[in-house]
Length: 254
Image 1 (cartoon, rainbow, N blue to C red):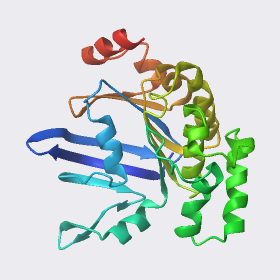
Image 2 (image 1 turned 180 degrees about the vertical axis):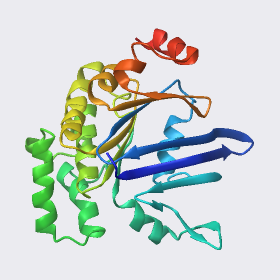
Image 3 (image 1 turned 135 degrees about the vertical axis):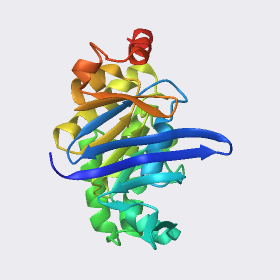
Image 4 (image 1 turned 30 degrees about the vertical axis):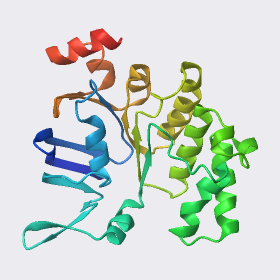
């Protein structure tokens, strides 16, 4: 792989006096599937949200496809872009949240077609046709006209994935997509993610699903206390981690 899609160099982030990211440096190449592992509070979700500028960074460089998502470089300094400019750079990044974030007043198919109509300026017919294809892809074609309240958590999450895919993203970010689901619903969501991985989608996944990391991901990155502790091949790291902190974490989750 030679196409660099995410580049992070010494990324720092604080909330008030509490520094959450202490200088994260890592690269993700096109087509890679990367798992971010680590205990709660280690900075995984914060880093993921910084990638698409849902959180601002306080230091370092964070670029997608060679450009900072929410900033521009001028006079040797980073300057924050306007919300409209940021939205333009963010449109190639899909994000799936822990809590689905679907519009409660819209049906499944309306949730998926809304952004292509408003942002990509697609016709309603074109957007609906694509939404139908995506619902079929995630196994929910029969649920097109149902509202989120009529769907299970796993079904809502699959609609959320389809909604993100409707923008034809270059990069998909998943923030603990199965942690809010009942155990019997997890498998359907992971199956959709595995299919995306097999199709070559670039993905960064914050997850506690160690089996998914081992079977599907190209790399596993273990974070703790706002730093990258270990970065390697999942089958090596998860079986024979190099760092004691990684070993301690895995003994508690495996």
